[in-house]
Length: 216
Image 1 (tube, rainbow, N blue to C red):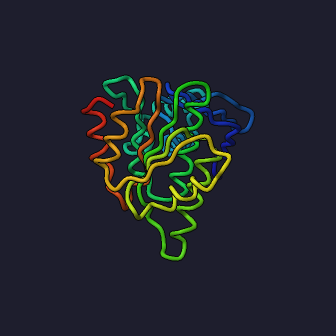
Image 2 (image 1 turned 30 degrees about the horizontal axis):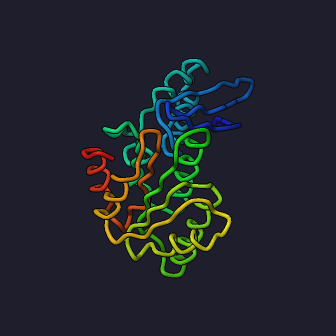
Image 3 (image 1 turned 90 degrees about the vertical axis):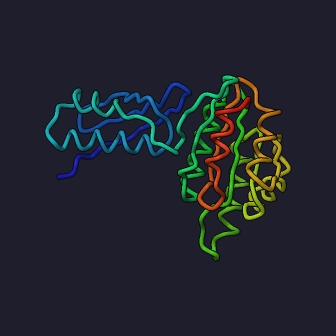
């Protein structure tokens, strides 16, 4: 029989995620040194696997708590200026990107600005417009401070965000990762959190490398 694990809540903080879990008559807060849906799902899979292998609840929790960051999925990196960069270049679907944007918003709810850098998503021709348009509108609802859209292929994210009149943030459409870097270099402050995501069709790994090696 599969072990049933119920997640009551997930809290993302700069120092890591806290997952409120329960199973049968047990409940606990599972704290991991990682953030994002990929890391949370991996930790829960580890917890479930340990329990199904017959390990006691406390042992299973301790082992699941060893979950480390998932490369390219909200992977935390600190820039030379002290800002936090989330490398989410491994996000491959609109749902992945949406979840990562929610993490970004949560991390900056109390302090700092949220900056999302997005490229073109992998999508079917039929769903391409809707996928990009929906993300632009979600960015507004999440109150992301700054959106930088890279490349003409992702323009509908920028357009959709600009159509939402209630938004206090700002959206920019740039042609290349180099231009995105120039914007970040002049605008990012120490308390800010940057998310680089939506890189399945717009290579953005080089942007992450430049930010980490530069002054942003």
